[in-house]
Image (cartoon, rainbow, N blue to C red):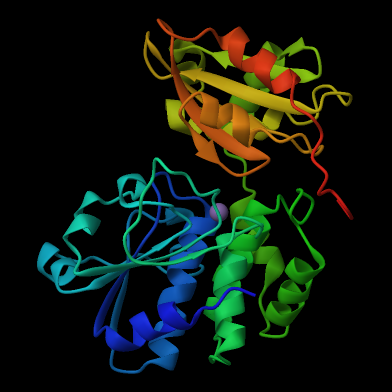
Length: 322
Ligand SMILES: [Mn+2]
């Protein structure tokens, strides 16, 4: 098991801690920020701890809002990054002002993303929330219901409700421990899986645009397509899972969204054990073994090149129990 001692020591040594996540925060990112803040508050009384960023507003009332902090506070703080690999990918660029850095992440490490600080990186974990839970359990920290619910949101989000590759026996053991903290699963799901009319419309368009190349399903969205659904490019990109069940035989799927005439943002997925990370890296991106992203430019790369590379992927050998 990874040694969490250096990170815990960093927390012990810091009077002010700011917790940052990635741009366009998802349930794992937001959940980790809230959970780590609550765990530190409850187990290290006297420390000032803040979760910084936009979070997920739909959860503010049910779980917790994010914190407002000024630049002076950040400059006096230790910044801990959760669910994000490097400073460049953090949502709030003020993170760079912090005195010291730590991180808890489960993305595949990349040479292009250096990080100077105390790093806890476990790419085999389905969610960063799972690592936060392990730290709390290893050090027998008090875990409030709020912290447990925030961790649950992270694990549930990144595991696709416990079905994606990388969901392990340990993942489910941790969920069982969280459930003993009386987490209310149904009401979390009601918020996390609420489908707005815009989202429903977008998913229908994505499925209608789906094309097949070999064992890969993909769709290309132009600006008018997502704008007509009332969505931004990034919101549209988040709906990549609409392609998951278009062709049952497909081993991978990809969503291409025109950010503008030149830039195309891409999300790559496989629910059947075909790694997509290598393809994302080839085109300058990264992420996880079976869920990655990249950005391509029309003048340099054809959409078809990416799809062809995905089709060539060989099945991974780590799918026991999936
Ligand atoms: Mn994550």
